[in-house]
Picture: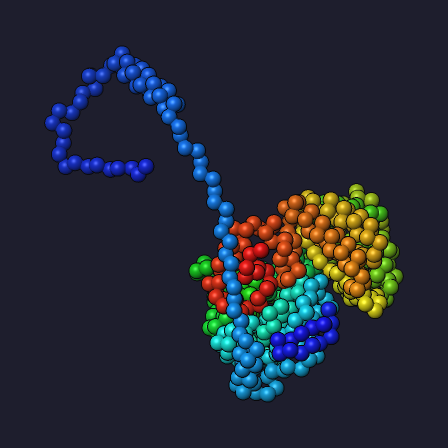
Length: 549
C-alpha cells in the first residue's frame, strides 16, 4: 500500500633561518689553515661523536607513529514541515502559479512516486506534483518549499532504475514536463541550450538538417534533466563518452531558490571551481537543473553496423577487450547473451529472427575509407576468438534493423512479463582487463537462479547490465535475486570497478558506496550537500543518508 503525507492510502508495492650582516669579517680564514690531515682528523672525530650519540639515543624510548583517528561520522537529523506546513505550501504555490500548476490527484501522485522501471520503490508518495514552466517559477517553488521545509524531488522522464525519483519523505515532486523547449541553438558554435524535459531523440530529430547531433544515447524516452542527474551514457559512450563530456554549463536553482549559472559558454574554462561537473550525477540532491547548454557533434560521413555471434559469452567479451586494446575507434560495441537474443525474438519488434547465441553489435562511423578499414580489423580480431559469420548492413535501413535488437532489448524483456512479474535491471562497470571474468561468473550465477535472466551492455567501456524477471510476490525469488545482484556488485568492487556505470545511485545502490569510496569520501560529499542544502530538502534519501548507520 502507498500512503501519502496527506494520509491517502493508494494501491501498490624545521624552518631554514637566514642571517645576514652588513659588516665584513676582519680576519677572513685562509685556505692554508686547512690541509688533508686536519680535514680527515675532524671528520673522524665528528663521525665518532655522532655514533656515540646515536648509541646513547638507542636507550631512549622514541614515540611511535600516532594511530590515525577513525573518521568522524556526521549525523544530521533534518526536520521537515508538518502536515499543515506542507498543505500551506501547496496552497501558496497554487495561488502563485495557478490552479493547473499543481496536482494532488491520487493517480498522478502514484505516477511520480512509484516506478515499474525501478529496482527500488518505497511505500510513500509525494504530497503534490507541481509543473513549472521556466527557471523563475522553479525558483519561486523552491523558496516556498524552503520556507515550509518541504522536500523537493525533481522529475523529468521518469525512467530511472534505482529509485532516483522516489519520495521516501513525502514532499513536492517538481515535474519539468512543461519545460521542454530548445532555448537557443548556436549552430556555428556547435552548442545548444535546452530545458530539462527535452528528449535527446527529439532534439536530434529537430536539428538533423544542420548536420549536427547530440551523441549520448541512453534509453529512447530519456530526457536531459534525468540524463544530467545520473550522468548517463549509452551505446555511443565508447566513442563519445558520457553526459559529463557534453555539458558546457548549467542553470541551477538552489534549495533556497537562488538561481546560479555554473560558467559561461566557451568550450574550455579555468575560471573557478568546476561547478558544472559537481551537479552532473548529483541526482538533484544539490540543486534543480533548469537549463542545460550542450555540446553537439558533426554527423559522421558514414555509419555502418555489423553483428557477429560467438559460441560463449566469454569469447564475446574477450573479443571486445581485444578490439579496444587494438585501438579500433568503434562508434559503439554492445553485447547480448543467448537469453537476451531469445527475448528479442519473442518480442518480435525488430522484424528479424536472430541466432540465440552470445552476440556482439558493432557500430562504425567516420569516412567511408575509415569505416571499411575498421571493419576489416575487427573482423580479423573476432576470428581469433571463435567468431561466427559477420552480418553487415548494406543500407541505412538494414543498419537500423540490425541495431534495433540492442535498442529494443529492455522493452522486449518488459513485454514478456506476466501478471505479478517485474524486471530487476541493474549495472556495474569494471576495468576492461576484468570484463570477461566478471561477465562469465555473473552469467553462471544468473543461470543458477533458474529464472529468466540475461546479460547485455556497453562492453566497449566495461559496463554491463543484468536483467532478471521475477515474481515480486515471492519472497524466496526476491531474496535470491538480491543475493545474486549483491554478489555481482561486490565482485565488481573487488575488481576495482564501480557499483553503477550509468544508472546512478538513487535508493538502490547507497549500501555499496562506503565500500567503493570509503567513509572519508562520503563525509566530504555530505559536507558539500550540507553547504548547499543545509535543510536537506533536495531529493533527500538519495546517494547519501543524512544520518550514518
